[in-house]
Length: 231
Image (cartoon, rainbow, N blue to C red; front, side):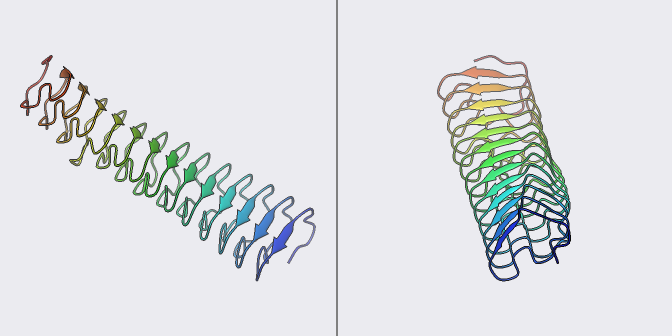
């Protein structure tokens, strides 16, 4: 029940029904901003149950059914799409655009996910950028970049990896500081680190080898566990 709140807009069954002292909030849709004792301000929640349990969180923009529906005190999050950023609780500065983009992020901060299923598994991880359907789908590590359809899809706890192109890093990768540019480049890497592959299927067989460099289509294709090679 609104007590001293002001400049709020609520449209839809039970929308912002628990609002107390919050101000400048917009809740549109059945159950939008319904569940929390809303004291936050400048939030926008549009869609069924969007921002459902918001309490003191501020400046969140949530558009789509169940978008950001677990956010409580999180701030400056953007979730656009069905279940986008739906797992965020206290996380901040996350941007998730696309159905189920960043849907498992809870306390993670400063992640960007654009595309259906991008950063799908990430929970407490930070500073990842995933652009493309299922990009960095399995990522739990920090500071990874995935650009393209399924780019870096199976990077798991690996950190500081860059994946550009279709279906590179197809194995469960815990390695760090790898750069893969091109379709299926470094697709078998598991724990290998500090390698760079540029070109379609370059270093495609590397699993645990480290500090390899390959330039060109299928360059270093047959390397598996070797290290310190240049092609």
